[in-house]
Image (cartoon, rainbow over the protein chains, first blue to last red):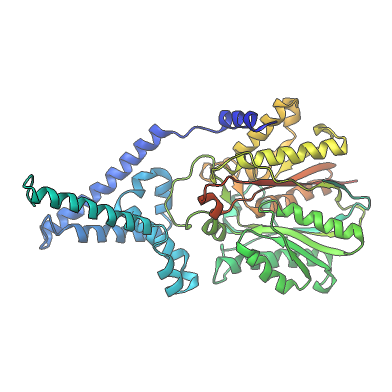
Length: 151
Length: 331
């Protein structure tokens, strides 16, 4: 049996990825996480001294804290298996990536283990997040300077 | 390369030890010992894996009524870098030791080497086998255990289990190794680390074909041909490969897979079980007990190993695979 014959068999038997189902599940769970996030935003604005501009940080911190609890109890991985991108893309997914790596490397000590590895998965999100934020800010600066838009 | 053992070395005793989640396995009742927690009360996953190996060896010694000094060789491997858990366990077992790596095919490659040493007269008693520990393997090959990534339906679950055997000179009323085939490395260009069954199926096919051809046997000469961890989808692929090359559907019912059956029909394990401990714990508990009980007379155990490396996978390379086979008979 040659490679082409094998590949034919393999493609016939391997179940195809249920994209539509996955997208729907991701939409529902992702939407739910963001709705919770928004409820937290309103909570901080109504009950504390935050404005729409400053409420982002405490909201993200709260979401990451909740994600940390779920990760520690082994529940976020179950959510992830169900929701896919729905639970990976929101900030709680970023938290899960950091925290799961931190837990994993605890046995190698706090400096080389936890410190050295906790951004193993999420490090690229930070790098490319900062880099793209810089580019976007640069574009905005140019547009403001030209008088097209205002700050 | 097919080796025919004239002296028919015997499997004198065996032991399978598993982790707590493996209580869900359909083979659970055949295991000798099940750990209370994944790490067996040790500080690290790797220590837990080493402890599991030691426990399996202790059980073997007890069953065969031997002590450590009687063991000439300890031949084993696991999936952690440098086979650290096995090295630490070997320190306690204190027999002459060679660490072996054939990924999940180590369960059988170790038995082949033990049989060769026995046939040569160099070994009276050799312990051979393999183990894997879910958390330490996931961390090494994939993502952190608690990371919430989505796995496809083709993914498999690495078991926490160890399976070991005591290989010695031919002994009546014990299963014996009649022949073995050392697998070649086969690479059909598969690249998906979440679809190992497809990557390994051609290796299993090649090893089984060559074994049958050189031994002048048919599939039906066996009561069972059991692959290691192709999983549910990989097993289907293997059966289809044989069907396309002339085997009947009835013949293909002789093929079984330890990984496909390990967790039964539980959907949370996706395509089934994998890991060096998967084939080892099933072969060296369930299969040997069936042989001893007279249900099987001749079986072919084909442990499949995906020689995946997280490094070369990220560098865009394919997944080379191998499969080693032993023909075990009961007179």
